[in-house]
Image (cartoon, rainbow over all chains, first blue to last red; front, side, top):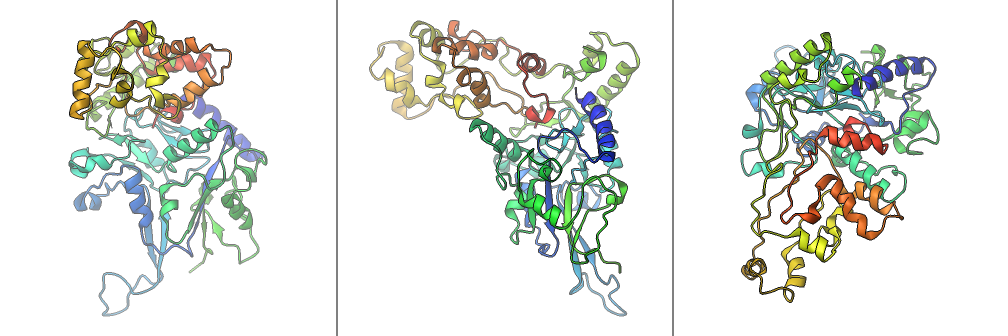
Length: 290
Length: 218
């Protein structure tokens, strides 16, 4: 089933992209992150740790690159060189922040390499990771150009949530044990809850009804989450979402490896879109050549 | 069913999935790797039905009480309530139509009837004792799904009971019995049905249920 899913979806996507179409999606969850609003406060990171049962690995393992943060704030400096004779851990100004989480690529490079089909594309346009199917081959992580998949090299259950902290764990998703790959799911448990509720009430999902933990937490509302399927298949998915409006406004198109924009006021870009992964996360920041 | 479909139909390992209570639902990483090796081996040679059974822990977790008698604090007679008195399952398991879990009724619900009905029976005396001590009986969970499974009673009941106006109310318990066994003829409920992925799949196939992995796995 899932293997079949991968093989058909992958070829369908590749053909579909040439013809300007997509998978047979029910929704296509995507998001917009306005980097001019982002202050790098890391509230989203904390929210993600709380919502998704992320293990706190400790300083040493963090230094070894075993951190399990599904959402991380990457930091870049305008002038990396502090100047002669100036020694400081951080500069006083010139920091830019880039919140990075799974880009939920339409043509995800992690999917076709999984030997057991633990990662695949859902009809919601999400790049799924099925933990109980994962055998920990780590091919997906090695094939991800963004390095946004995290592997449980150890069992963190006892060290990360000593009693009574295990009582704070979110029951809507599993606590991953040693040997399992994990990554940002766009808070699929919240999407699932909202879709279930909508179905019980015989209505469609509304715009803004689904809010991942990071979007909900962001103090400056830098993130917008929503269904962007409406852009390409009007009448399907959630209509007139804020997120889709932003994608349209900044003239960023899905299924393209390079965006052609004349107006310098348009800011949207996607990370490493030249690799033709077709990510569904749009960053708003004018691309500057330094 | 082709051999690859059979391979991916869930009759094998669940490595490294742990639930919030700290029980290990799967097997360690080394055994997971063994599962990979076996899977590759199985892909190379013609698949036989017994090949998967060589993998340790290759069967889905069946829970603590599969097929066994359950030592509940009070020997609750489902047969008297549901069969002889014809009480609807959802009179007591009231959350089934509103939420993910069916729920165990609070003691107050039992006392709603049993403050006047059958007060001289030993089991009811036991119940009254709990009620007077203001302590809930610690019921044991019989049908316990693994933590990587998302199952909602709500949606299944909508599909098979509430969206099915031709179903007489007396037959609602047969819908429940499909997964929970013939509880009407048991005293303490036992786990009779396997509740494995194959069990779910057969019904989803027959009734056009969703087939997306992430619909049920979390």
